[in-house]
Length: 165
Image (cartoon, rainbow, N blue to C red):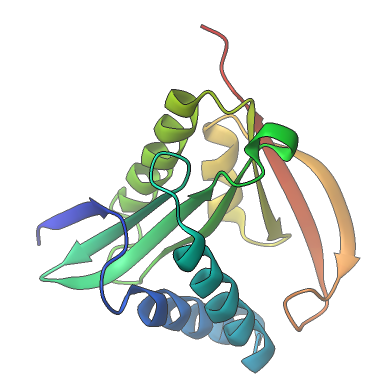
């Protein structure tokens, strides 16, 4: 199959990204409606406030169907750094390097924008994702129990400083 990575909003992407997250995390960690609603509402707000050149959204597509995504929210980059969000790859693409390609697009964009750091929130137990993040320069900077996503987990914050030239 030919996987294509595109940049920017595409019709239906909000619903599809929310669906990918809801299905994966319901099966793997019993997340429910609170999580799906949070993803959909925050992603919708991001897309409405999207500013080209400050923010980025990349979609992995096969045969026109969205099978992966990552976003970089630069709205608070001057103070808090850019925020990496909605990173997911479907079972159809998992293990084929698509996740690494998506993540690298976001990090290249962040570096080109001159953002001093990129941060992301995740939770303990997502070993493959953590390995990928760490291989790209992210380090764990905070860990605590929480239920932001509707289920009690050990929330983790990772940060990646901008590489020095």
